[in-house]
Length: 315
Ligand SMILES: Nc1nc2c(ncn2[C@@H]2O[C@H](COP(=O)(O)OP(=O)(O)OP(=O)(O)O)[C@@H](O)[C@H]2O)c(=O)[nH]1
Ligand SMILES: [Mg+2]
Image (cartoon, rainbow, N blue to C red; front, side, top):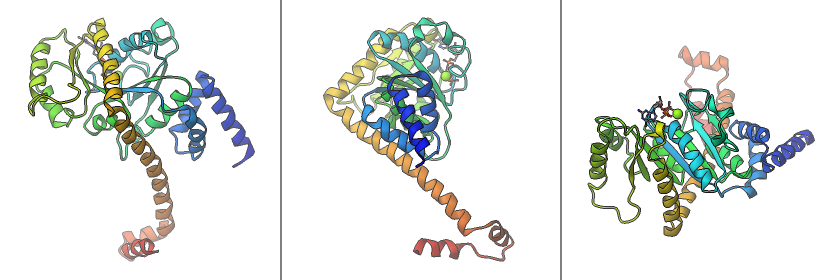
């Protein structure tokens, strides 16, 4: 590795450890890229990571995840946390929409809070592969609670479990939402249910339906996921939600669930990194085996591609 790069990585690492916002931003950009230097950065940061409480806020588009996140921030700060926010594929807020875009500069509530949007890079895993490395950067910078907002769509909602210690599922009182959630396999993944927009009709009814659905197979032995009603735009019910989040953390720490879950998270994080490398290797190998000329020959039926792959596998 060139000396210059080592030097700049060292500088970047120092900046992150000192909690400098610009260094944090640059480090996250590197950490979520495919640049092999990301591993060197993560290697340097590792001794300072692993301590943050990670809370996933998931739910359908427009359910109120960003509004809730915004409301949770001051309440979590009041509990003594240094809060970082990662928004995966935000369609509104955080990236300049209604809720945070304008307020970010003026709002005391957001002072000292680091907020960052990450694009999900498709492919296996669904959830942005940038999330675990971004969390490490935030941890190294001293953030000890990371809120992760993800638009929940099937697989994404399930993946959030692999990065979050506590998953909050945001629902809205609309007919069919409970059934939708059950179909999406959400019933098993959420630790806390929020029925937001409780100012609309049907919230209480929905809580009943959801409770019944959750207890179909009998009452759970361990953590019984609470269902809480909120009106995020008015900040109503958010105190209670913040309490549940804290309670779930304590419950897990006492029950041993914390470690089990973190082992899973770790394995997933490492698997993503290895997968990235394998993908790069696959691209290179494909180009090696099949030049533009060979591809044309295959397309025209003049060459059979499969023996080549078979031979390569046997090497
Ligand atoms: N009536 C009502 N509207 C709400 C409430 N909470 C949020 N909203 C509105 O719902 C809309 C979507 O809120 P967001 O917080 O952007 O929802 P989101 O889930 O983050 O949306 P995406 O990130 O785009 O998926 C906004 O217009 C909010 O003002 C609530 O409690 N009641
Ligand atoms: Mg949002």
